[in-house]
Length: 73
Image (tube, rainbow, N blue to C red; front, top):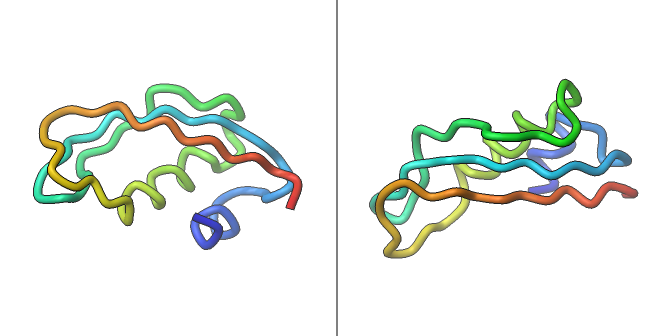
């Protein structure tokens, strides 16, 4: 997560992002940003980056994925 955050957003800021993705074969794909509390600060891109590496186990279908970036580091 920190690699995605430092690449796309300011680690001192905080944000919450809600994604909607398709879960299949243990991975997420076709993610879209439903909401971003710090719009325009790159947290949407950071969340999409994290989603690419997030393991989903046996879940399948459309899933909502909340992400919280606490800031302060």
